[in-house]
Image 1 (cartoon, one colour):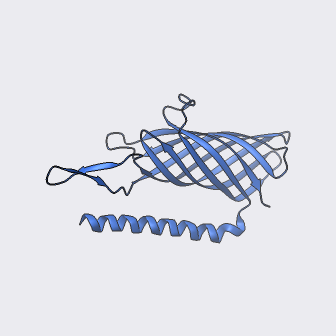
Image 2 (cartoon, rainbow, N blue to C red):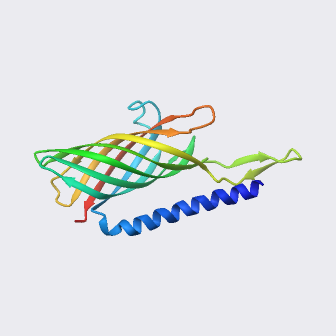
Length: 197
């Protein structure tokens, strides 16, 4: 029974990854910009632990963008990873709707809001007790989570198609552990986006 459940979990993960790859390849012709950022993560109340370093990366793409005189609205998708040595290492897929307000074509403030899926693995080996009382290492299949994010960002617009940015995201993760249904995660990101069209 346990082996069947593990196989089913692996099959669902593989199907989800295939669906994402197909969606990305179909949408590739519509991608207007791509971004890459390095990030650090913390589990805390927002703006209380910015100094901790739990490394990660994030790759993003913009599928739809509506530009007005001083503002831009866009739909973004992201794939990311981070490592927290005390809790987990996680992979995620998420999307957000972003409002950007430009000041004198020099800088822009960004306000994104979004949802996504995260899959986490314990950063160290996990052991289970056997029937004879001994312990053996357990194969990790990870844990699924839903995530909801809001953020605040600032970008510099004077470099033509390349736009450096800094961004702070607050993410609600659910479930976290059995005794804590929702946990706040914070991400400080520095990166750049490249306009393709």
